[in-house]
Image 1 (spheres, rainbow, N blue to C red):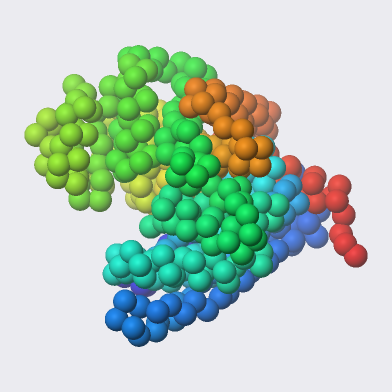
Image 2 (cartoon, rainbow, N blue to C red):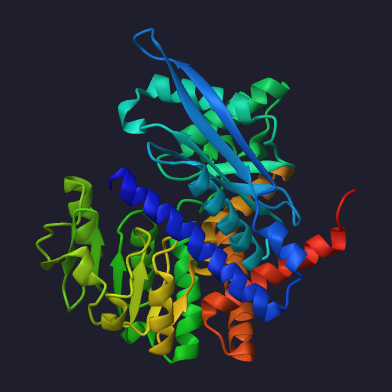
Length: 422
């Protein structure tokens, strides 16, 4: 995507989030003063990151860390490394994290971070030096009681290990709870890698029981066969659902009788993509959105369901595994057509829920089994879905609006109880 297109998507993301907040605030009759506070980040830090490159030269990168709201607890949110990340995008994503944490009722506020770089062009040594210097620069505002970073776009457990080690070295002792998404060997949590996709399926189970969808006799389409989409596909298949189409950035594959996921996974491991898999026919990402199915899981990019293709969506249930896959106009079209959408701030919150579990385990130095993590994740996702669904029924609004109402109510109540200082 070119710079202009990426900037437009950033603007749309922030605009859509602000619009949903305004709608929810009107429904709740929220104090205008509180709304003004909620639409601004509490703290935004920009840092300069000088790095010695492998050839001996010095490059200077720019990084950001934004904390949107701390009323319900320390800030929580990922760090992304991307050549086109900027402050506007980080502010929008930090705000979304506030609502996501509030919807699933974990004691965090929202945060996000980013570094303007192309990690694909950096050697492992350069990436490590960049990460450690960035950590040093933002260490004044992060910590287990302040702000807990996590992986995001083009960051991973290895990067989190460097952040943890740098912060720990500065403090003279190990501080595993400063980040989540770490390798298990140094305090990461079992079940973290599968958490987002698994959480999506837990919400699908809740929705299906209310919509009269028999998962054992249903069909599903997954756009985006990465970490989230592949786990969701596997878990849905385990419930008896027929996964008829999946895609990634290179293309997709469709088989109305159901895809052989074991064969598909082996093919992707060998070729790097699901495109060209011989167990079905080719389908584009655009056409995949309007395939006939019971369940559609957009788990890749923003703004893939638009006003142009929403009238052609033939799923009964849409579960947003990605952030912002449905535009505001498309959302209204789907709601008007009676298609249930499980919004991103609920559907894909499994990752931050298990990040919370990892943080708790790190603080206690007491680690859970995968079964315990999954049991607690199911409980948290199911309880959150039920609360959103009750609001939806009571106020006769969409699931998205109900989710924002629940989140806004929880955050604003915390702010009112704590008051303004001084």
